[in-house]
Length: 149
Picture 1 (tube, rainbow, N blue to C red):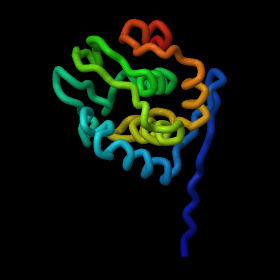
Picture 2 (picture 1 turned 135 degrees about the vertical axis):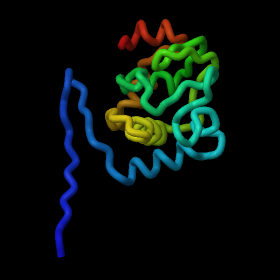
Picture 3 (picture 1 turned 90 degrees about the horizontal axis):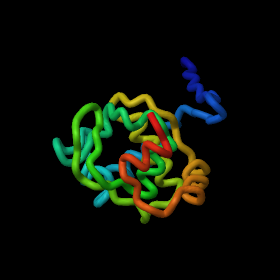
């Protein structure tokens, strides 16, 4: 019988720990993403969004910074936004019904679905952001001022 060894690793870049997600986290995140009234309702099961209205998550240039992604999910974002060179006009509502662990699982799933290569996100990161972020809904401009590309 062959033994399969799965290695989870953690790398620190600029003081931020990035970890590979485990299978359980990805499965929970996928279930939450695809749940009724959740992310899938706007961003679609394939993560491609809706042309001209809802931006894609698959291959999104906005997913390069987990802190930015956490801020969008926790506080929402309103106003026209350019993603991957295309303009979109819908608003992202803040996700108020999910606890820190569920938000972390969803973001981790999105960061690894559809070919994305983002970082795993922890409940501790979400909790820290929930306490530190301003209560106002972001605009693309205010978000990029706080979390630039």
